[in-house]
Length: 348
Ligand code: BGC
Image (cartoon, rainbow, N blue to C red; front, side, top):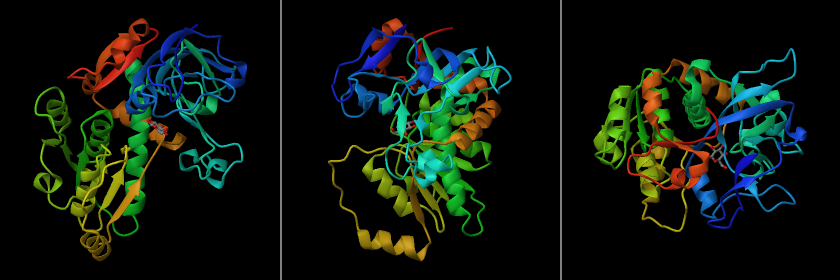
């Protein structure tokens, strides 16, 4: 079968390969892949900056944002032929650490977790894959291909959960939220904020293309300046860019008792002048919190499935700005001006 593979840490090593059918050891559920989303992590892997091949191998099947259709599943289980499913990315470490032991692999303590399409376990960008039912999440069948947005939505569903848990250390009724970055993660974070009834403000750099309208049509407000010009003292900031200046802008301008959740991954190598004393003072005197958040466990995928089922499908459809057949995978990876989420199609 066809699969998009890469040699991790070797730039430009991606190719469309002919690989064996998925191993039975991956699980009893056989899934036909319909589409795979491309995200910043994939771009890093393709650029030779991130990623790990499975033990004893050179190449990794790429793809961690997926949507597929069940071809075979054990009788009497939660999944049946024809169900639309998304595969969870991370698998617990084998030790397991105390968090992985209770299904909170997104908080793995020892780093020995694996991630499909990223770390030591083949991903979903192959015509078929196998999985165990506990790592396959059913999506609303009316979503069709848009179910590919479930994985990035799970990442922001987790971020919002972190915000709530930390905010909930005292009376917590947030009214305003800022989201930095109007890429897919930022837009999906904003979507959940709007669904929760918050006044949401999204900050990005562009003034044209689809992003400003996507934000407006969500019922949120689009801005291009710094955080304090967009809204004074927001209760929540979800930082989705990993840009150092914005991270500190968020920490400096979040409101009293507010929570900043960092979801972007910075590349490092750049330093900033920060007045650490002023930052420390405001964080202490105003009980502010900053938290990092990565990945998602099954609870977050389920919350994300609910958020997508409640969303306007026409709006979600505009997030998937380009669909590219797998045979033209190179086109999918070449960034175009109006790209939001690009999906590689493997089936229909
Ligand atoms: C994925 C996460 C993963 C992270 C780090 C992100 O792109 O969505 O599931 O944990 O990369 O590898």
